[in-house]
Image (tube, one colour):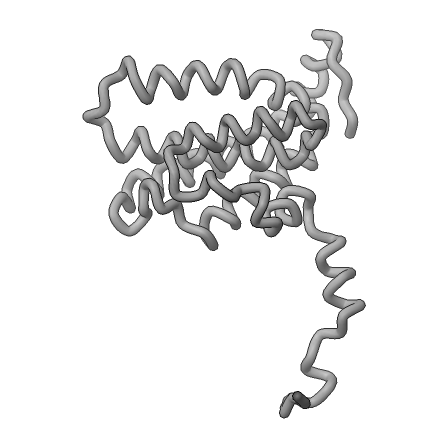
Length: 177
C-alpha cells in the first residue's frame, strides 16, 4: 500500500542497514529478542546464567552486554528489597559476580572503548525496556540509585583507562584497544 508520506521522509532500506551496522555490538545484539528470551521479567540471576552460556559459546560481546544488564537489575533488586536475607540473594549475587563476572570482566576490560559503548547500551536498553521483576515505577529510588551508580562506574572507567591498561599489562593480560 502506498504511503502518504513524501519519499524523502521515509528512511531507505540502505540507510537503515547502515544505521544498524553502526550500532555498538551490545545494542545490536540486544535488539535480537532471542538473546534475552526467557530471562526478561524473571529473577536477575537468569541474566548471569545467560551471560555465562553466551561467553562459553564464544559470543563474548553479547555476554558482556547481558552480564552488565543482569548486574544492573540484580543490584536494583537487592537495593529495592533490603529485607531479603543476606545469605540468599545477596550471597548468590556475590558468588555469581565472582564466578561469572571474573572471566567476562577480564575479557571486557581488554577493550575499554567497547566496554564504555556496552555500558551505554545497557543503560539505554534498561530505560527502553524497564525491568518487570523490579519495576522502576514501584521502586523508583532503588532504580535511580543503581543507574546513577552504573553511570559513575562508566565514567570512572574512562577516567582511569590508562591505569587500567597498565595494570592489565603488569598482570599479563592483553589490551585489544
